[in-house]
Length: 273
Ligand SMILES: Nc1ncnc2c1ncn2[C@@H]1O[C@H](COP(=O)(O)OP(=O)(O)OP(=O)(O)O)[C@@H](O)[C@H]1O
Ligand SMILES: [Mg+2]
Image 1 (cartoon, rainbow, N blue to C red):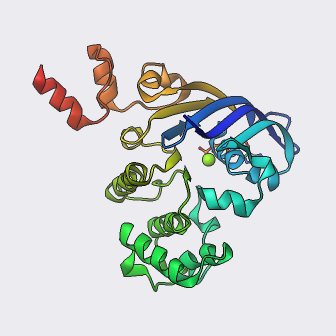
Image 2 (spheres, helix red, strand yellow; image 1 turned 45 degrees about the horizontal axis):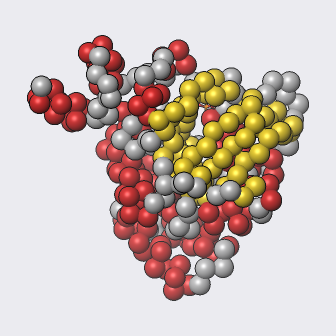
Image 3 (cartoon, rainbow, N blue to C red; image 1 turned 45 degrees about the vertical axis):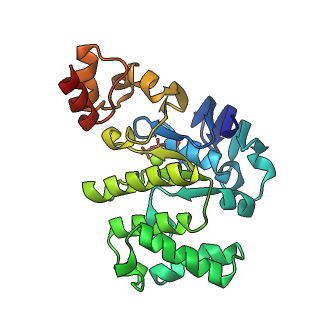
């Protein structure tokens, strides 16, 4: 199967830094699958995402070794417009992503930049506003929005571009649990309906397990664990500062294998015994 992303022997030092923020990172992600990226603060998650979307080394100076391939093509041989037609990158802080005066203008911004014609742009904006239930703030100035609303608008700004790969840096960090679950369900839907791939940094593992096919854990810029979600849950994630949800630790102590990934499925399995 074709890999949407392939990272080979990637090492990166931000300029002026004597320690690598990425050290010999290797992994690949099959097209259509979802990767959960985890690890403690400062381990290099955002840095890896920047390299995957080409911002490193294009906009961050430093020492770069290795390669990143997007659908088999070297990301360093692609320009930003080409990358952004394929990859939607949600920044860790939505304030860095929103430029326009109103929500609707902001959604139109990226489409205009890519030269999408007006009727098509309006259609995509309407669809995305529906999908994320943003109609009630459509005309609102960005500066009047709550942090959580900004996060949703930033996500909408990416979805209108119809990317094949979503790269989401803590997309639910500013959201209440219900809206966070909603985002997870939207990623699930985009995957099943359109085969969209995703790489997501998410601290709430119980949410992320609903969608992740693979888990990659980093520490000090290196990959410590990489495998299918089931394989990764069998390794000692606690050693890398990751809190394993109770539903998984209970199953570990009961010797379950494979694990049920949701409380609902776990209860079902218990009842079937
Ligand atoms: N623009 C930068 N210039 C120099 N060093 C940086 C820069 N951005 C990050 N770093 C350093 O690179 C390392 C990895 O940082 P990164 O932001 O990728 O971690 P992270 O896993 O995303 O952390 P968090 O969970 O807090 O978001 C850290 O040591 C950080 O200080
Ligand atoms: Mg980060």
